[in-house]
Figure 1: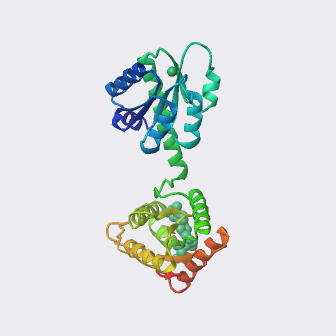
Figure 2 (figure 1 turned 120 degrees about the horizontal axis):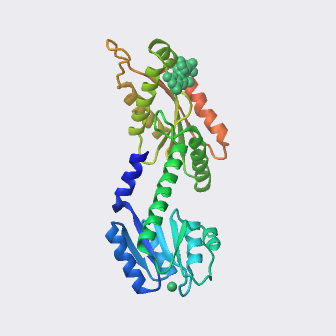
Figure 3 (figure 1 turned 90 degrees about the vertical axis):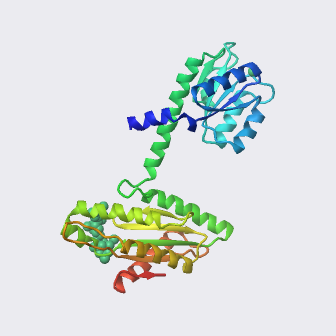
Length: 302
Ligand code: GH3
Ligand code: MG
Ligand code: MG
Ligand code: MG
C-alpha cells in the first residue's frame, strides 16, 4: 500500500488541476506553479467557464476562488460535487464573508486563505489527492473478489438491477450466464483446497479475457460465476458461452508434477423476459445450469 501511494504521488502527469479565479494574475501564477510542480493545469476565469471546461476535460481537483462575479465559489463547489467525482479546494480571503463551515458543508475537501502560500497549497493538494486515491482503492476493494479479481456477488446484484432497469426502459435485450465448475469438490478433495483456489483464480482470469468489451463477469459463489451480457440475445449468448467454455477447457492445471488436469464447466443461460423480476431471471439461469449438469455436465443450456 505504501509503495502504491508513493507511485501515485510521483506520477504527476496523471494529476489534472483546474484553477478558477477572476483575477488574471492569480490565475497565471497558480497555473505556472502547478506546472512547475508537474501537474497538468487548466484555467477558468469564472464558474460558468469552469463548468464548461469540466464537461470535456478530466479533472481531479478544482482550486477555486470564492469571490467571483456571477456564480461564486460556493455555488460552483456545490454544482461540481453534485455532478462529478472531483475534489474541490476553495481559496478565501480573510474578510470573514464566508466561513470554513460553509465551505466544507458545500462539499469542499479543504480551503486556503488568500494570498495563497504555494507551499501550503501544495501540502493540502497532496493530502486531498492521497485521500482521493484511497477512496478509489476502497471503492474497488468493495466490489472486487480477492481470489479471482473479478467483481463480487454484491456488485453482481447491483449491476444486474441496473441492466434490468435499462432493459425495461429502452426495451433492450439482455442475457445472463451462470457458470458452475464440474466435480470441483473432488478436485479439492484430491489435491487440497489451496490447489482448488489456484484453479478458481486462473478460471477467473480466463473468463475475464474471454469477455467482450460490454460484458462483465462476477464471482457469484464459491465455484460459480455469472456474466452479464447487455444488448445480447440468447443465441449470441450461446456463442459467448461456447467461447468461454472452450477457453476454460484448454487450460491445463498441474496440482502435482506428474498430473495434467483440465476443467469443464456447466453453463446456464437466460435471456431477460419483459417484466420479469430480478430473482426470477437469475433463477432461470440457475435452472438452465442444473439442466446442463443433469445432461452430463460440460454443457450449455438456454
Ligand atoms: P458439480 O459438478 O455437481 O457442480 O459438482 P461439484 O463438486 O463442483 O459441486 P458442489 O456444489 O457439490 O461443490 C462445490 C465445491 O466447490 C465445494 C467446495 O469444495 C468447492 N469450493 C467452493 N468454494 C470454494 C473456494 O473458495 N475454494 C476452493 N478451493 N473450493 C471451493
Ligand atoms: Mg475573486
Ligand atoms: Mg456449485
Ligand atoms: Mg460445481
